[in-house]
Amino acid sequence: MKASEADILIVPGYTNSGPDHWQTRWQEKLSTARRVEQAEWSKPVREDWVARLVEEVNASTKPVVLVAHSLGVPTVMHALPEIAHRVAGAMLVAPPDVANPDIRPKHLMTFGPYPRDPLPFPAITIASRNDPFGTYEHADDIAAAWGSLLIDAGMSGHINAESGHGPWPEGTMVFAQFLSKLKPPSGFAIPENKS
View 1 (cartoon, rainbow, N blue to C red):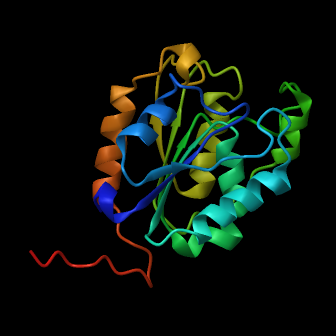
View 2: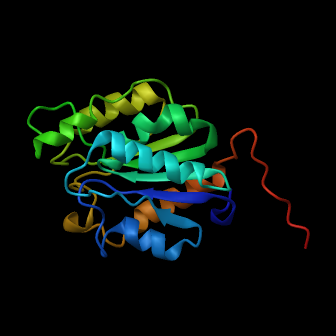
């Protein structure tokens, strides 16, 4: 698939992705990308976040490619029963360990535990070796359960602007390669170019 053939939904995490975050930069560069806006970024309620994502997916006219960061990852996972049939693929970055009682703020635990069913579409999970919100071993475990390819980002913190991932050229390259291999879910046809 090409970016123009998909609705690319940017799914930020807790407190949203600021102007320097790679998600914001991708949204500005990709003409078919849009952000899933949440009413309450700093006091996330799982049911509300999931419902907003479902609304955005259902409003899409093209196959959906999800680009989730941090708390956006469990949001995607909990929305799957209602959206999976419209999703061509997902890039899941820095999944937090929402079942860890030491996570702060505490209310992020309401997004756990993760569903562990295999994903019905291709996915890549990118995890860091020193993410303060989740261990690499945790990411490895859930990616294996989902059947997602796991990419080791090394010592990259939470893969956000604070850890130096504003422009994230490696992520851009991984996403472009991933997108090029995706096919629309059954029921979606990509219109042929008749030029």
